[in-house]
Length: 197
Length: 186
Picture 1 (cartoon, one colour):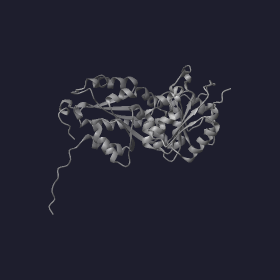
Picture 2 (cartoon, chains in turn yellow, orange):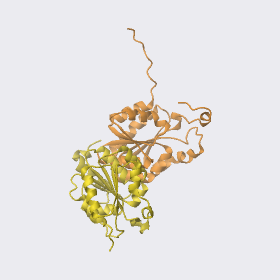
Picture 3 (cartoon, rainbow over the protein chains, first blue to last red):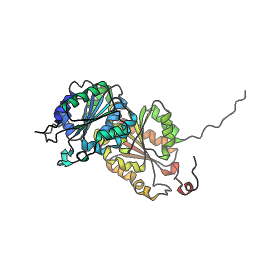
Picture 4 (cartoon, rainbow over the protein chains, first blue to last red):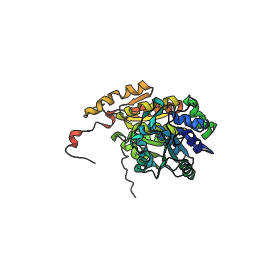
C-alpha cells in the first residue's frame, strides 16, 4: 500500500468544520472529492471550464473579501491555468487558498501522465509568481498545518498536495449549473440574490 | 474677476461608458489591454469604486467574472478581438451557469488594418461569438458605443447571459505602422 496521502481523506480533513468557507472545485475528481465530503450549498463544483477554477476563486474572493474561498483542483486543471497564478499574485487576495490535489495524472481520461510527474513544481511556480505562501504537502501532518494556515487567513496560498493516483467511485454533485449557482448565491447573499438586477 | 469660458474637453465614448459602469455598479474591470480601450482603462484605474484586474489571457476574465457574480459583484471584460479566440471554451461556463457577462471588444483586422496577422481572428470574431451563443452588438462610430454598451449592460445583467459589444476599428482608427517606423509619439 502506498504511503501517499489519500485524496478523499485529505479533502475531508480540510473541509471539516468549514464554517462559512466557500469552496470551488475544478472539474473531475476534485468535484467528486468535495461532494464526497458532503454536498454543501457553498460548494461550486465545476463540470467543465478547465483551467478556470482559480480565477473563479479570485473573482469570488475579491467580491467577498471578508469570507474565505478555497479552490480545490487537480494538477491537470491547474497546469491549464498557470497564468492565473501571476494574476492572483498581483491581486494578493488574503482570503484565497488553492489546494492542488496532485496525482501526476489526468485521472478522468485514462490516467495519462501530467507534467508534475516529470519535475514541474506548481508550488514553486506560485512562489515565483509572488504568492506569499506556497507549500508542498506530502503528509497528514502537512495537511493539518495547511488547514491551520487557511484558518489563520494566510492568503493567497497555494498548496501542492501529492496524493495517491487511486481510482475511486465517483460521487457526483448536482449537474445543473444554474441550480448550483442559485443555491450558492441564495446561501451567500440571501433570497434577494434572485431579484438583484 | 472675469470668468473665462473654457472649451469643454472633447466628448469621448469612454467617459460616457465609464459613467454607465458606475451607474450599473460594475466593480471588477478585467483587462488584457488594447490601445482602443486605453482611455476607458485609465478612467477605471482612477475610480476607487472599481478594481482593475490585469489578466495574462482573456479567458481568465470570463472565469473571474463568473466568480464575481457568484459573490454578488458585477464586472466587465475589456479586450481586443484577438482575445475572443482565447475565450471560447471558457464561455461555456457563462452559458451553462447563466452567468451575466459583459465584454467590450475593440476590433483589429477590421477597418484599415495594416498587420496581416490580425485579420483571421478579427474577421472571425463575430461569427465565433455567435456560434457559441453570445449575443453581439456592434458600434462603428464613437457616438454609437454608449448606446450599444447601455443595451448590453441591461441584457447581460437582467437576462443572465454573455454579451459582447464590438467596437469597430473605425472608431479608434488603425495603427499606422509606417509612421511608427519614423517616430514614436506619446
